[in-house]
Length: 270
Length: 83
Image (cartoon, rainbow over all chains, first blue to last red; front, side, top):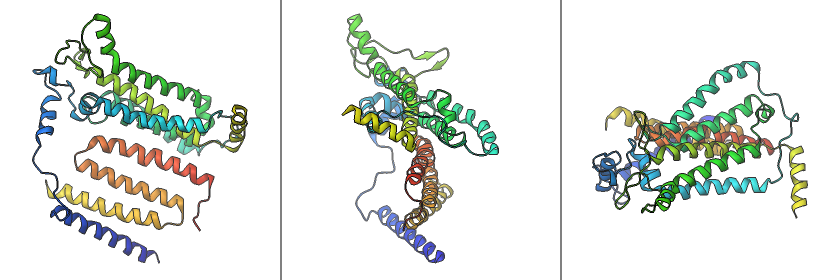
């Protein structure tokens, strides 16, 4: 029976391969050209271009430059969709509070010891991916989901009680998420506010000097480029994503005793 | 592009299709979660080979870390075996 299943799976794969061949041959309409298009070339030239600052994001990584500078408003709404869903989760489970001492005690001592070695490595990788978002591949969302995985791993290996006892309750995670979101919002209007205060023209989501506006975020930290707003966006986004995903996991892992309590509060609201 | 990375991507794609099929057919939901994680690993490899490291970086923690964790939680609240 098992061999029959594998044979079917492989033949499905071959069908997909055949389809890919048809697409490659142009059988389902034109495909993207192999050479660099004009739009892509202009992004690549301008992402880090100190000789033409008004067109540049001064970010060494073109993807982050597009995501948080050229197309910053798109990313802002994209982020809002994710956070609206997390608001939905915490609204459905409103009144939810963790209770200690009703879960298990985590996995075995061997797993705990090896995880203890692993945890700081994941944390460092997440923070570094987030903070170097404007220099290397990665960014706020990537770094934030690394840190969220860390919290999920902790709650599975060391038990939920371990996480809650160290102060990572759902209320605090919600607060951290809000701090991250407020940070993203504040960064996006920082130069606009400065412009209003100084009486100069400025734009929303402005990063460096643009045509008609001389204002600019600080470009260098000691001898390292910061990409202006990009490092702040990545930092706050990482915080918001890590807290938001961990909050969703924590709330979805609720136990029966906690549900009963949450339901009581729900009726009280009505 | 060179032949070697493209053939690695093709092998990963074949693996992902097989894993997806087995995940859909599997009656054991926990096994299905593991199989879909295998599919995600293959996809992350393909993203990396196709020069999208940003996507690979977000794909690994979300589809191998967070998504299986949430799915296992949901399976725990229902039943493990599909009838």
